[in-house]
Image: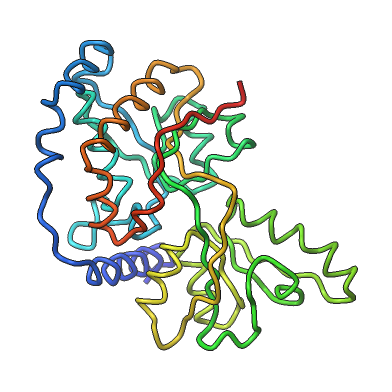
Length: 297
């Protein structure tokens, strides 16, 4: 068995475990009717350049609940972000093609013109806004994943992490937050935390399961689902609020697509569809926030 195949199998297993934990919910009528709503029809008239087109959405499909391989059909993707992208397409009249890339390659793929948008549980930070414009749709709450019983007594991104090893995703905002603990740990006479960098959530979770890492800090929904999948081996030590938002990335060269998405997302939220989708995927409905543009301009 090749390494690549083994990784794919782990990802499918992770997605399958997550899907098996979801309640069976009917497809909402809002999704089917969205494209024919008065607002969406008006948007298709206002932005005719997108109607009938196929847009490319760059995703990192390793975050069950947001985007992951479909365990029933590995050629497809499932999750909130996939459903949200399809809803935007329904409202604005375009279809979608998904391009899977490493997380660190999401924005470079957008900047190079190989993708039209990025909807992939990406935090819309000011630093990332130098590379793309973002339309926010959710607040950010992180969870602190640890081995069952929390043997290292980690309580958050604080001095309790001194001397521990954190598994994190390359390019994630948590990486510099952990690195920034070096100075205060040294000042307290404690060893600095160590980082292990991986290219997806499944590998970070496996690092804890294998005892290579002590903690993994990421979106609280990702952490909660990991605990549900491995209740005898993993625990959530704490939840922390980060000053970020989850956003949809759009090229700075395409302000009309950005503005169209802001208006379409507003209609999706007003219709109650995003709330239904958050429920469908077991995500925190209280995290929904009105679309706001984050840009460095």
